[in-house]
Length: 121
Image 1: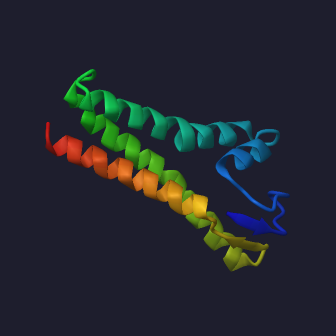
Image 2: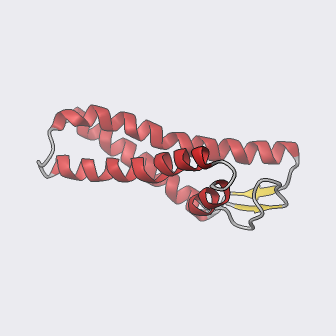
């Protein structure tokens, strides 16, 4: 997303990585949680879905992967909430950039794929 005049981030563009980098000195726990739920969980879920499709992991893990997809979607919700709060309080100007839409599409596609995989087990 693109942001201007925000007290929390002195950035003109905020990405997941730049947000984590900006949060790390003051809030390492929050930065770590964001890194896990925005980067690690979706990556692990995608790799696990591929391994299930290739027969390298048991299909019974599909149910657990559906929960991982919901956790990955939580950060999309938090980003949307952040945009609404900033716009509503007048702390600055925030507008979503193309990466937010791409990331949301990837998370939703991953969630849909896990639901389909769960039905076919």
